[in-house]
Image 1 (cartoon, rainbow, N blue to C red):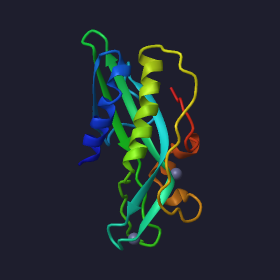
Image 2 (image 1 turned 180 degrees about the horizontal axis):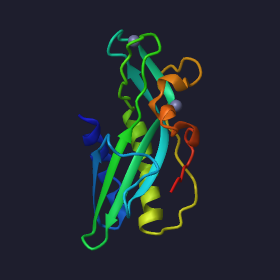
Image 3 (image 1 turned 180 degrees about the vertical axis):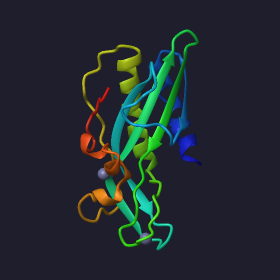
Length: 171
Ligand SMILES: [Zn+2]
Ligand SMILES: [Zn+2]
């Protein structure tokens, strides 16, 4: 299954929390942090994911993989749209390393969706929900500290603004 399909499936398990509106989610690598379109909201969350270098095949895990969501509710049509972008990392061994997409454990995608849904409920439906959050799972080895030089989110200035597993509300 593609990441987008997993997002859609997990979002639908929580759709009853979204006031019977229709919500769609799509991967969009073009959205930019801190510049949501008019009437759109932004939410950034960190999670654990694994990566694999497409050149040397070495794998690594990172607890600071940032995911950016932009979302919007069209109240006239009862239709919501979510765009999601995940930030990449690259291998520290290869000089020609490519930016690689993260592989999230399904459980962590579920955690991301749960946090996102809470954020949507507060911003689009004005619910007052407080700040409890389920944590991500770490099922893999993480070698050494986070390396900004190999993290796309650090390059974009997104990483430093989010604490791992923190509830971030940057709007
Ligand atoms: Zn490599
Ligand atoms: Zn980073």
